[in-house]
Length: 433
Image 1 (cartoon, rainbow, N blue to C red):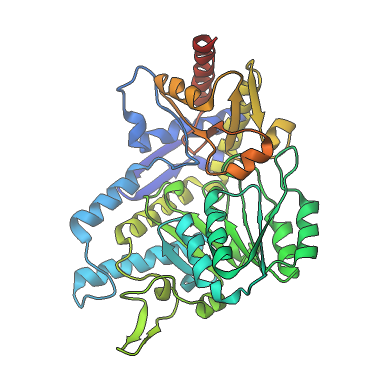
Image 2 (cartoon, rainbow, N blue to C red; image 1 turned 90 degrees about the horizontal axis):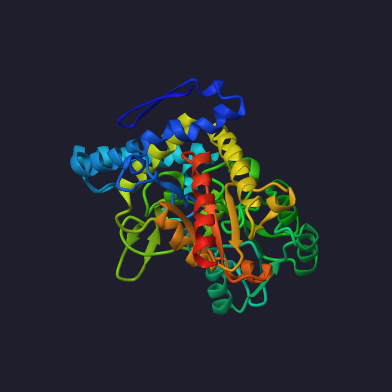
């Protein structure tokens, strides 16, 4: 059995390497739950079945305590004060950047920009890289994208007279690789921006094959790793992408903090995203010059506490181990998928419904019940999942649906969550029929 002890921000795991067979994998979710205070609540007759981690992950005690500790006893503004409290805060903030650079495999910590999240990271590139586009240039996206990887490019296209094109998906919900290759060849896009894991379906995009193809066609490549970073190892050096974005709150960290990775030579050539303090080299009444990255893209007082607590979340994830998390989630995913597949009236969406690889997200509908109604009824059973278009309206339109229910996993997920979900589905069927 897995033993786990957490003292403040320190995490000690015993026996993690011993997780081998299916039963032990499933036990991780149960064993890790005491580290997440929300699961200790007993205000409901049933345990909390939280199946909305794709929207935002719950927070472990060590992250909550680190945030509280910094705000209570360690806070000062950074990069400005000539006193110990400010110097210490600056050091912790800079250490957080270094830790996250290591986590994603960045060769240089200056390639890591702190933002408010994936959405701001993508908007940053859409603005700061704007000068490299000319009227008529093509930006290639895919139908798997979250709105935050569509709308910023639509706004840029309107400003600069660009063309947006979309790679199609297959009937199974996977990226159409033939269409991708064809559009690279015929359109010669200036930039390709695509997700690594679909937030609506859990579709896994094989970036190791597609990034080199896109770059060989002359395109810069941006990756939305919001959904992939909590579940798999990210190595930007091996991936070869020019830009990558992720969010802290999906990685068991605080809200309001995220990361943009960018190749240093690109960041150096780009314009600032926002103007203000700390991003300048000099300011006169005639004009200003810019600091070097990352400072150039971090105007004003940053999310200091959140960055420091995010680094604690990274510590927590690494101590548990992304490989162990992946194995555990894979087992629970397979169990939940088969439970839902066996239920009458349930339609599954995504590659896993066809025996294809899929990650951490199960989208489905129940015949005769709107997804929002299903979610409301499930909440009465203390089962929480997302319902709607999941900020992926073009994708759902391509599938011929307006909304779906979406159950998504985290390290704390367990088989019992899906057993409660099954009971909620059965309860809803009784109510609506």
